[in-house]
Image 1 (cartoon, rainbow, N blue to C red):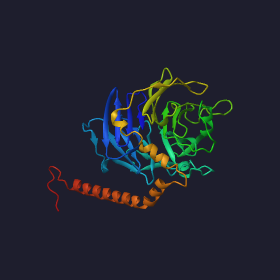
Image 2 (image 1 turned 30 degrees about the vertical axis):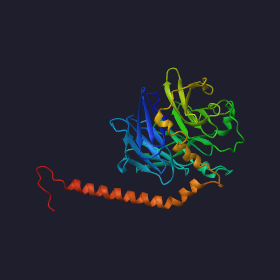
Image 3 (image 1 turned 45 degrees about the vertical axis):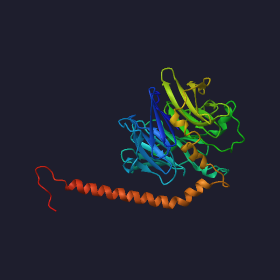
Image 4 (image 1 turned 90 degrees about the horizontal axis):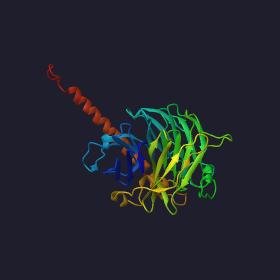
Length: 375
């Protein structure tokens, strides 16, 4: 898994329970007690949000912690979903926290008060042809364009544009037919499974990493974020590249965004060779974005190569794409869901009781000059 700041000053790489942060040439690693399913930088750039498969979102500091091992306890938990968590995002001012899960649901909460839900964005649905039923219902990722607008992608093959606060869908395009325009991208049919584990916003451009077709795609937006940019035939501006031959897409991020030159660099992580490759993407006003030739990037640190072949987020999304004949992972989740929900409710009750005790103790603390409270 990859995440980055637009200027490329910091890049996060996660594999299993190991998270590495590249900060201007310096690499620091953190060993977590839980496996990461999705991640995003906080607006202050000093901490990150980590989403785990069980549905919880936690905050972990990047600076000020000299220990190589980070313990995530209950006090770090911000929100929880009752379904598998597939993506998290913060708007630019950091006031809204978006989270999505496998049950077609996008939730918009206040980051300062995560229990306060502002809206739900509901619109992604399953396909008519139920070849990969769990996958087509799942939302893979969300990203904010500004403080109000948001983009999502799901297994139905659609990329949707939302007004987040109102939960209103503004526009949508079906991405799968556009993949034919990418050189070397071969599709069996339009009903082929679709899996896009990475969604990134850079200016008025959407960058999508597509695992099912091992490619990276860009989609242009209008400057006011009200619709997708289209040509005279009402066709969306879509372009992309394939991963290296015999390599499979794992994740990607954007670095070196140069606003004046109107270009940026897309870094892609592949398997089974654990390679980093990159392309420079140039913005074009009246056409799709242009991609440069592929270049080799830096190698992965040793701590991450030991996890080669096991990427929790990718594995989780692929498990949701199993056919009805082989759905052991999803079936196991459904069987244990009631027990898991009971544990969540019990944990919430313990937290509430703890907060009440702390409040009582705070009120009972003597105030200087007013004596000791009468018991």
